[in-house]
Length: 304
Image (cartoon, rainbow, N blue to C red; front, side, top):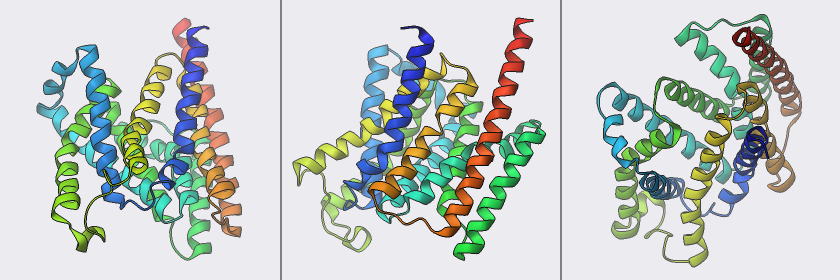
């Protein structure tokens, strides 16, 4: 198997895990969101830390947590924790359709941030895609009587996270390890409170879930794998595939989320969703075609 084929298999596998993750978190819907988020953070740290230890790279962490990069890591940690928590909440309150919309519009938000922060040019095709996406969001806002805040939160935080990662020179596994390392003390305090102090007024019960049921405990540990494995696959694929290919295959993630929400989790799709989602899909088709064209032009320029 060629490196390109290995990359394709890896990116598809990563997107399938991400896309089917609502079904995993549905199994843990009885666990309060902050408790589940805390376990996801702790077990992700355990996995990433083990990987770096095996690679002999733990010594690279202190440098990442000093100077300007430390501030970027802190910001990345805050943003990704909000994103993870928001997605967990979307599953527990039956709003995976909105969550999928957020990850559909994420690349279009990246276009806006690229223009505002890095002065990147917005081509005519991308401008049309942004107009269509804006129309879709406005349609949902007017039709449902409220803006799709969860979609905007998930898409926006993931886009901001992408911008921060763009400015970090370290690899994805090293930087994510640093992020969850910073979040781990807060997660430990929260879990201590739920298990030992019985923060009933906050979490709605006395005592945490972990250790009370083998299946639930195993799933909480597995939340670290659900986080770590697709990220490693994505990193593997990104080094072997063209950016346009990675971008196109990534749409498999929200597509599967949407399918899970409607076909398995039984979420309803209103008339307004039926209008908005085709607009988003058309916007993504235009955006992807434009990105593919630019990527090919850039590669031709390098060869020439």
